[in-house]
Amino acid sequence: MKNTLAIACLCTLVVSSRALAQGVPGEPDISKARVRLGRLYLNPTIMLTNLGWDTNVFNTPDQLEPQKDFTMTVTPRSDLWLRMGRSWLTGYIKEDLVWYQTFGSERSANTSAGVGVLVPLNRLRFNVGASYLSTRERPGYEIDARSQRGELGYDGGVEIRARPKTFVGIRGARKTTGYDSDATFEGVSLSEALDRTLTSGAVTVRQQVTPLTAITFDFGRAQDRFEFSPLRDSDSTSAAVGVKFDTFAILKGSASIGYRDFEPVLAGLPAYQGLIATADLAYVAFGTTRIGVQAVRDVEYSFEITQPYYLLTGFSGSLTRRISRPLDVVGRVSFQKLDYRDRVGVIVAAPDRVDHVRTYGGGFGYHFGKDVRIGLNVDRQKRYSPVLDRHYHGFTFGTSVTYGL
Image (cartoon, rainbow, N blue to C red; front, side, top):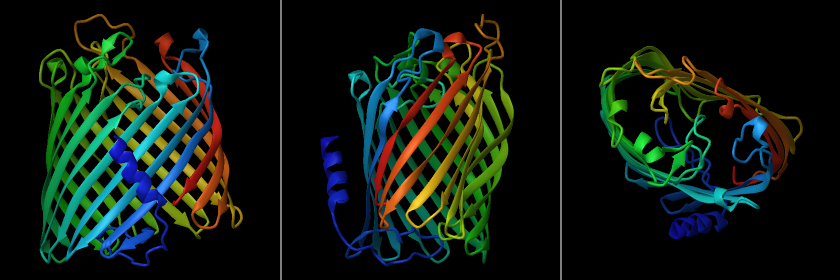
């Protein structure tokens, strides 16, 4: 971890002029690279976030007197691109250094990294990649404990041009998730409940409507296999249609909607057949307004043995408005719904349980030149649940400093 942090900080401290290279559709966007060393492009960034107060460090229920603390997070990161003939080697490395003044148990150093190779040929295009994560951040909206876990993933794909604007391909991925043996939440061992391996594959069709816009069709299969909790094992079949906007378009990102047939391997747990969706889009208007939208609807696993999974339906949005050359204002909102599925034939504390998580926030920032932003932020989160000890609220407010974005 120390080597990882040293590399990230070294990249962040390099001072160089912004690279002027611009990419082309279908290739990595290197226009943000600040450092160029021959064919190697680097984009080092550093952020100071959450320099302020967290009024509910442990997401404690309202009736149990939530505890507050002064907190700070420093995040150095560097993205890299290396041109190798017609191919690209891409990668990133990121470190989150989380500090709490009073509660030392909540301090952590979270590392994530990834590497990939993209080979675009005349009629054939293939890519392979790997990712690594070691973190104590909360894994989602359900588990409030900051427990150590690791993830290791591999993926790859091949795509062939079948017609001038039509591409057909296959892709595969494998990801292993593991918690520390002493990680627990509400008396449940997270390792025994959630250690698993996901193996997936899909057939894909991409229709390139314009140089910057594509429509995609995916048909895939996935298997989740749990190391210590085979009662959660499942097989899934899914089909989805989506749209992708290249990084050089005004509207950037992707969105998809489809159908999933989620089938538990063992009897006693209801299946799910229904709608799934995902979206991560950003739109920039007139160079002064940025609108970001994220959405999800899919199956997520729970640590609860009597309610082993839930259907997550969520929406997040943000609006950033540049009101003058140096000053901007930001508004944020998030709505999440956790719809639990009960295991058949067992006693469930809260049958047909549905939890809701709401987050509202905003702030403003002041820009010093092109690369430095100082911001003031306030966010309020509240969770509603029929389980009383999962009902809580809290505020975070403080200062952020960003260099290199």
